[in-house]
Amino acid sequence: MSQAESDTKDILYDKDHPFAAKITENRILNKEGSAKDTRHFVVDITGSNLTYNCGDSLGIYPTNHPEYVEEVLRVLGFSGNETINIPKIEKALTIREAFLHKLSLAGPSKKFLQALVEKVTNKHEIAEARNFLEPGARKELMAYLGERELIDFLVETPSAKWQPQELVNLMKRLVPRLYSIASSPSRYPLEIHLTVAVVRYNSNNRDRFGVCTTYLSERVKLNAPIVPVFVASSHFGLPEEQDKDVIMVGPGTGIAPFRSFLQEREENEAKGRNWLFFGDQHIATDYLYSEEFKSWKQNGFLQNLSLAFSRDQEEKVYVQNRMLECGKELWEWLKGGAYFYVCGDAKRMAVDVDQALNQIAREHGDLSEQEARIYVKGLKKEKRYQRDIY
Image (cartoon, rainbow, N blue to C red; front, side, top):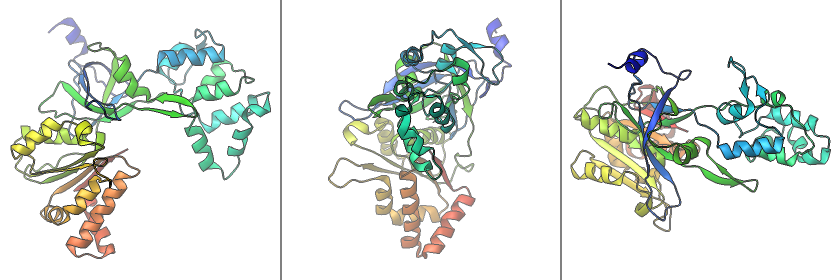
């Protein structure tokens, strides 16, 4: 054992003490012509003593875009070398360091907006925002703040003059992002695979980008040990009994944990059957990990593979539509003790899938609406209905 290995073998890496990992692979999963940019990342955790289970997530501390940080400093009139203090961080930092690594430049808070309203000397600069601070305007305030980042307010209010520490005291911390792990610990004990949709959009007439997704996809150099990571454990996981059937619903990046599940069950030669529901926009460009899933279907490891590509026909088709089409068989699996898993979008997909599951219980289980709700609630209580939604 080398001295370096000896020095690190007893270190416990966690959220407060992340491990500096390497990204060894950054691969675009979508084909040319796709409207999406979904990446497959391989994170090398050799030497970390980190372990993970299927269903866990990897936490990543991102760095804000250096050019964006310099723009914020320029608008503020700061050199970047001003020193500031952040609670729970013992040493003083330069404000440039803080903006890069410790503070969120997106999502200003109500507290910040209240301070800004008091600080501007030209009241016309932020007249609109005053209305959103009135009692009863919470929904409007959240929408207003959601379209803006720190830079928007700084540009729009040149009459407000900030002291570095004063501004820092009003800013949110840059928090780690959690990504569902897309690999099996039995197959890849020293690697963690991720399936990440790179976020880019426009709001308030300014191009935006996901802090962590663009950090990983554009700014992290391959094989450089600089990405701070930790494993976040989860209650979302495979049944202990290897003979249990599993039904997995994971459109888009929601496929990540189910790739992990399937790899793990293959490694362990699980006797239970596997049924995967996957969907995205177009089969030609957005069928993530298609070769793996096709192979599993051909060799019989995947008993059922139900696909829903929403834009490939005039009427949009989603995973919940495929569930309803296969309702009779899906109900038979559930009555036989199958576990049901959902991963992905919380606002729409997970709600629609839950409604479809209730409808299947009514139609194929001959249950009343109330009885169906009780049945689905019972699945959750037995941990046979699990969700990893975001």
